[in-house]
Amino acid sequence: MLLVEQNATLGLEGPRWLTAADEDGRRRLENNNDFVRVEIASGIKQRKRVMPVLVNNAKHLRDTDLPDELSHLLPVMPHASHTRGSAPTSPA
Image 1 (tube, one colour):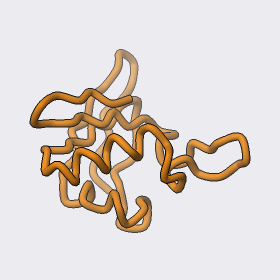
Image 2: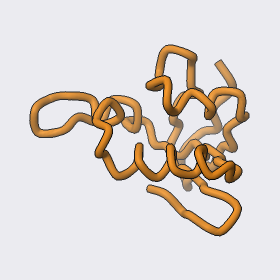
Image 3: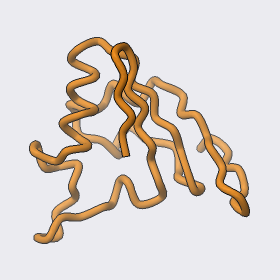
Image 4: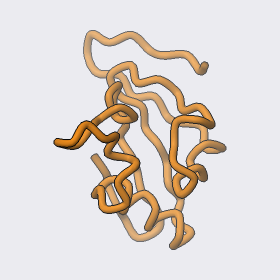
């Protein structure tokens, strides 16, 4: 899920965000036309502040997790958001 404003984009990343697959079994983030990838890449290209927000115990990103186009997310420290009943995650 994305929340897009004029100067910032929040990317809400759940535990399956990096592994979500399309109908062909291909990872959605590898699809250049995937809505989430397009919006994140657009924010990066427009020099907006793109902030990953980890939800539901999602794991922190590693340098091998993202396509090159989205690698600008890596230096950004994700903000952890916890739903009721979920334990906080610690950085990897």
